[in-house]
Length: 474
Image (cartoon, rainbow, N blue to C red; front, side, top):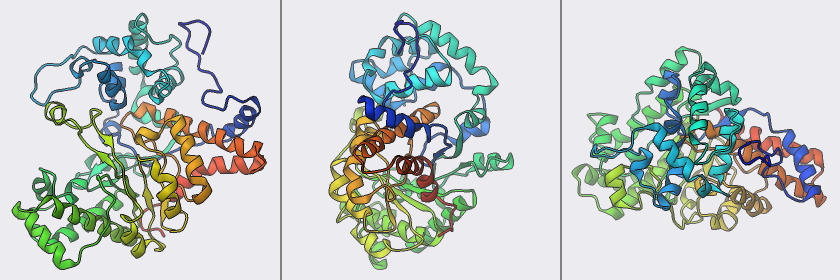
């Protein structure tokens, strides 16, 4: 930072080690990855954003209202959702003046000190938009006006920013029943290899969800048997693969993958159709379907991403008032060793399966996940995710897993965000943290500097490319 409290210049060594000897090594290593292309294969930016390619509406709509990291921090200190423009399900009024929303955010900027949200936002404002006025209550309007003017420029439209950010490929996350119409439009304009969908079937696999039967009807009006249901899922996967998809995405509370025999699966599917399935039966059906998803991945080559362990919508009153994804999803303890055993026993050595497993329970990294990925060829460790994609979380991840899984059994960094402009900031932070970790190994004479640079490139670019190949490729 500059000494001038209103002058915003980010330090080139931010997030690198503080020790002078390590910092010098980390600088050299980071320099080899800083400008590498971004492989963004686990994201949640809506494909419509790219297909429409319209200017972003305003700074509040871009930075504040949709960002659940940011919203949850403000809400935790008493700022109401209404003041941040988060809509209500009942249609009752909330703040709609974007300048007022931005002012509320800027007034509470000190809340983000020491958080990754602060790092990402500083990168977005100072590096992407070139803002040189530090954000605060007294500068809110000036920063807002500068951002609004720049958002009107063609270079800040979504497709142009793909080049600015050096994003080589980006995936969206799409419901299994999505029409993929936006992806077809993008493919017709030559973007089909660069913006790809991801198959997310959660709403079809979890029969306990209130909307399961409605989602099943969207899959097909004539699906009345388990066998027809499986066939329809396979057909939808094929549609996604034809549209460029490289992965599936599964986010459930448990990692259980215990298979069902066909008779039991048919029976539970029938009970789900009738609305008489119990909670325990729904959990068993879901576990069996995760096993089936792995089986299907061995056949169509879609990388299977599994990220369990989050109790969604912790506050039912907030869910009823605001809907999901407003900051009330909370991690829980998650067991993997026994839960993944059926899947890995069946497919863990299959040459056409890539299973990328994430966790928000970091106690599982060294105890369960690294040992599993360190022996089963089909399994890869996903990057520190959600509450763990922080400088400290990423450092702990490397220290916890490398002894057992090495570097090659990890799948590279994923940004996992709806906030499009934060993608380069998130990848930049991961590259800086990895440079620091590798610098320590060089300083301790455990790696040569050229090996560290080669490893840094692998973590930033080569490993994610390898983890998400085109579907059908072994």
